[in-house]
Image (cartoon, rainbow, N blue to C red; front, side):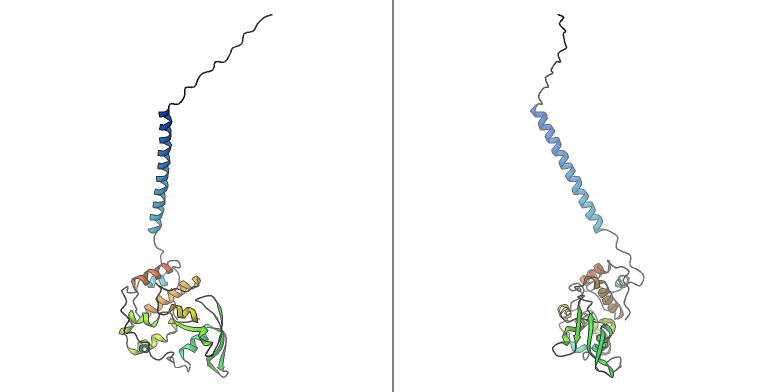
Length: 252
């Protein structure tokens, strides 16, 4: 019987990794991780810087954003001498059409309007307002307990006008301002009361879709009457109008 010899594989012993080398590898991984984290952090900072210095939108010709740049920016006066009577009797008939300004604006801004006197289109009795400030639909009914549901807002409040230039006007100009349709909007009564005399820096319509038209109208009024804006008001107006650089300047 012939015996066949076979090659027996030789097992090679793998030397163990020295502890120092293991520690070195761990340090390398930690350094790599720290480096990656630093890269990510740097990228975040660069993005934030880019966003902060993103070029402002270019205002369209004739836009409210373009007109905003023509307004004087200064701190308002103290306002402790403000008196509503300085703007004349509330809701005068300055256009001599036989109806006071409040009823003119109610008739302009509401639909399905009826009048207290069926033969005279003057004193509004009923109507439906699609309120621009809140987006709500409001049924108006003239009456002691119900008329307040719809109010006529001075878009640029009388007191705000007073502390930003109107205190220097004559009585005739103030009366005109208080009854100018450009500065008047029929609105939800509670929203109007919440606004009070605040400017765009501290109050904007709850309905965000109306903020651009609202601020554009404020700018139009201040341009028309050469009223100033406060620094905070300017920033607030600019922030709103930068989202709609083509928003036109209202004319009436």
